[in-house]
Every structure is written in C-alpha cells, then in structure tokens.
Length: 525
Image (cartoon, rainbow, N blue to C red; front, side, top):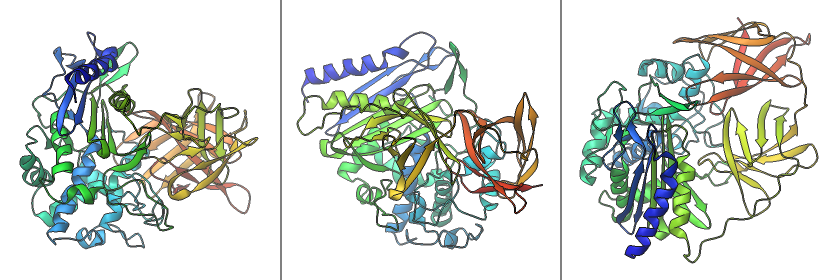
C-alpha cells in the first residue's frame, strides 16, 4: 500500500471519528490491517471522562461477544488433541445439565443451533437486568430450570450466550485449569497478545481499561453491569492485540484454527447457516467476510475480516451510542474505494406501504418499520439495506432478516433456515385481551408476574429468583396478541406475548417470546 494511500485512509478514519473528538465525550478506536500490517490505528474521545484520559493505542476495552471465537478456538485445540470431540453430547462433559429430551452437541453450541434459551434473556425476564449484581451460580440456575428449547437442535439459528458459557466450562473440565489461564497459555502468549485477558469478575482491576458510558440527554452515564463473564464474552482486549489474532488466520502460528473456526454446519433441512464457530461468514459488496460484533453496557466492538483482500477492520467503542458495525463498514468502504471486483451498493427500493407495525397472528410476534428504513424487533432497532432482488435485509450481523415489500396488508419475512413467516398489518387501535389481570407464574423462569392496573392501563410487577422489577407496561397489538415493555440497561426492549384460551373462552395461560428465549409459558399462580 502506497504511503499516500495510507495517508488518505488515515484522514478518512479521522473524519469518521470526528463526532467524538471533542471534550467530555467517550469515543472509539479504529484499526485497519492490510497484508499483514496494521496500516492504520486512529482514536478519538476519552477512555475516562472523570480523569480526562484520552483513548490511545494501549487502551483496552471489553470486547464482549468477540470473545466467542476464542472460546471456540479453545474447544478446537482440545479436539485436535483428542481430548474431546465436537460431536460429543454436552452431557458427556456437563452431566449436571437438565435433560431436555434430546441430544445437543458441542458443535451445535458453537454454531448457535443448540436451541438453548439465552441465559441473559432468562435473567432479564426474571427481573435481573445486566446492571443487577449476579453470580455465575445464578446463571447456571437459570439454565438448570429449563425444560424446553427454542427449537429442536440443528433446525434453526438463535443466538445464545448460554451455549458459550457452557463451552467455557467444558474447556475448564477437559483442560483441567481455569478458562482464562487456558486461553493465556495456549493462545494469547504464543501470539504476543499481552494486553488481552479473560476477566470473569467485573471487580477485577484491569490496567488501561476504558470506562464504558451510555448517552443520557446531553451527557453520559457510567454504564453499570453486575453480571460475571465467561466464555460468552469475558475478554478485555485492544486493536493491536486483535490485529495479532487476525494475523494467525493467515500464517497459522497456532495451526488449524483458521479453517476450523469458519467451518460451516448446515441446518437439518440443508439450508446454509451463516454462523460458523464464534464467527459469522457472509458477504459484503460481493466479497466474502468473516466477522463478529460485541455488545456490553457501554462497550461495542466489530471485528471484520475480508480474507480475499487480506484486509481486516477493527472498531471498538466505550460509547454505547456508537454503531461500530456501521463504523467498521464505512472504513472498509474507504479502503475498497477504486478496487476492482467490488459490487456497488444496490439502489434502495421505495419502502412503499412498509412503514408501521406488523404482527404474525399465529405467534403474536411483531416487527415495526420506520423511515431510514429501519426495522425494530423486541425493542432493538436496526438499519435495513437493499439486497439487489428488491428486498431489504438487516444490517445487524448475525441475525438473518430479509423482508419483501408488502402485498396489500401482508408481507413475508425470511429468517434463519429459510423460514418464511407471513405478517399482517396490525390495527391502528386495539384492546388488551380481557382476563390478563392477576398473578401468573413461569416455572422455567422461576418468576411470578403480577399484572394489575397502572396509570390507565395494565403493567407487570416481576418477582424473580434474583431480583424484582417493574412496572412493565402492557400494550395491545391485535386480538390475543399483546406486548410487554421491558426497560433495561442496553435498550428499552419488549417481548411479544399471546394469550391461550380454555374451553370456556377465558384466558388460561399466555406464552412469551423474546429475541433469544421463546415459548415461555405462564400459568395462573
């Protein structure tokens, strides 16, 4: 890469970071690896607002789910030594797990096709948000209460932090040492990643760690998090160390990992699964990409590789309002500018008739579309981009979501494993189903929800095994479908719910479906 090309890219990176290059703001850091060299590393904003410390080359961040590829790498190292097989049942190594009536393999955990409900969502629906103090034992208890799955293993994709917590524990059981020590000895030290470490306790003092912040009005609030961190997201790292990890994909200093981490596992119906082992394998502008994001209160990360161009973009922020996925892709666009073989971005179709709320009557699942265009599910908004065939697809990493433009008052949404779901436009006005008021219990959450009048409507008060929460307001959607809003540290979310009626026509139960935990049934307490 010519020196002037590097200069132009650095200036592009500074332009992208300019909104946070001001006093009193947390910010972000950007890195670009090209042909084995870190050709760009630019930062803006403060690592600590209280101390006035700027983000610099040595600043560390919580990289959250970017940790998942390292957890899978640890499993693969043990498999290469014959100490386990990725086809082993998880009960072979963790016999204390509940019997869910079907066999779940280690590989299904790595590919997010296990069907296990996400422990963080289980905790949240039991009243314990990420800011609430929590122990590993509490997370394991939430997993142990489960008697069902989101789906049969291998048939669908659903992102599950549960699977990666369990993978970390399998590494400890088989490897015979703490997870962090295994990672340090087998991966970090050999690759020279001296600023990367596994931090299971949030109380652990980490030199050079940026503080995470969330936007609040015109200012910022220190992000609070009380959950322990395991194989699902416990790493602290930085741009330089992730660049060293990226180099291993090319030179194989730790052999075998590069190929094994991106090995696919198709769904049972033969459809491809874009989620490999802790990494997503997809395409962008006609180029194959390998990437993963990370999200934790006050921190966001995007690790984005373009193998055929020997190029990797790393974006990390300690500002909860920064979209590092978009930031990384804008820097990638700049780096690809003028190079052959890169597809132009398809024109955006007119989203005629798309804007508004839609509901799938059979499940009560909802989606909302707004100008931009953007879509929102379970309270999480995400931008949409044209696909080239007249549809719109989610720009949010590992969540398959492609929508066709409406045909009258209905539209089709394609998600994982080629699943097609028909949605209908929700009515402008609706009423909550009668008979919801009362006390309800969900055994798999270990939580009791009391629904009672609150400020002109109904709201839920939650009493769970670790914490209490509420009021969570109820919102009418259509017929027996309704929504429960669940405010949290990361976003103001919601879960979709559908009432079940007995032979007498009265509500006998209701089922709650969240983004990562579905089929949770509430019965009268």
